[in-house]
Amino acid sequence: MRVSVLQENLAKGLATAARAVPSRPTMPILANVLLATEDGRLQISGNNLELGITARVGAKVDDDGAITVPARTLLELVNTLPPERVDLEVDERTHTLTVICKGTVTTIKGISAEEFPSVPVADTDTGVEIAAPTFQSMIDQVVFAAARDDNRPVLMGVLVRFNAEHASIVAADGYRMSMRTADLERPVAKPISVVIPARTMAELSKIIGSSTESMYISVAPGRNQIMFFVNQTDVVSQLIDGKFPDVEALIPKASNTRTTLRTTDLLGVCRRAEIFAREANNTMRLKIEPGSGGAGTLLIRSEAQEQGTNEDRIEGLVNGPGLEISFNVRYLIDVLGVMDTEQIVLETNTPANPGLIKPEGRQDFTYVVMPMSTR
Image (cartoon, rainbow, N blue to C red; front, side, top):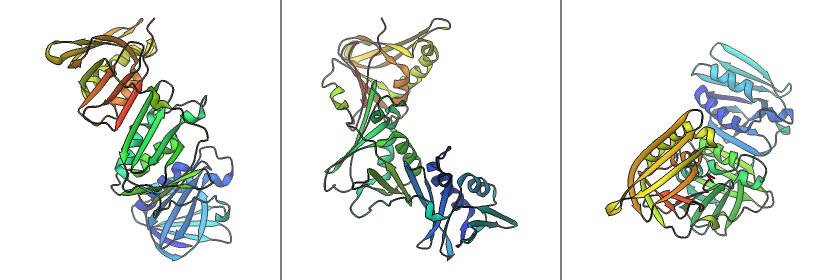
């Protein structure tokens, strides 16, 4: 293999593929990235057997070929090279990669490409098509709500569904649930419902980056895998077995009190409340106070026995009776940090019922959070 590529493009491709390289590989080959030529381009792949990523880089290909080399070694080397042309040459007999850039000549010992696990490719003809920025926004507004421990493995995943012309993503950890919906670029032939590891979705959001194009998603029949194609990159992930709970049943069908607040105002007071709430299991108390003509206020209080107390009052619109309720302040900070509307709506019923948070004027995002007991 003889290939020439710009240092900047090579570094970017390596960094993308390296997201799938495990820090503690179970097999030596998994510590490597695969370098291979394809249709006049350089393919760079990483694979940890749960997540596989292949990035494509524009290159001048003189001779086709393939090799795997230690991912960390190559990435660190390329990141130190000047922004010039990088020549890659492979000695297939000794499985050695030579990297040449200006006055630098480096040889790296590798392993045969035949031992590297393959990364399937998404079907761009019949797969699900959706705008990449839309799917990225859906991921970012949901993935943080997935469980972080493996007591219920299915909750460490994100439920992704495609039905007719609509898509939805749901995550829950037993204390909160986040759901986002969107329209598809084209209708799907048959419904799809899969549970994808949350860490895969988080990496996918980073890979999408600033892409403004469509992305494609397909499920491999009988292989328990899902494939994504976006930004000239293939991502393949194992799916999580198990039935995702019917978390949508948690969504309150009606509310007694509807409070409308500025997103930045509520986020600011929650961040201040967190300073004092940490010692009290992150408990934050909210007192909703209706006023005249629909105006009202929200009083937020947190207390730390050793440090003191914090109280904040912000104005808003309150429709319905007053109420006192407690929430985990971290759960509110998480959702407010991904809100993209100027105002949010908090719907409540009783101190023992879950609260519902959604963007003002939109129906595509729903966040349900369980209250905390203060007894």
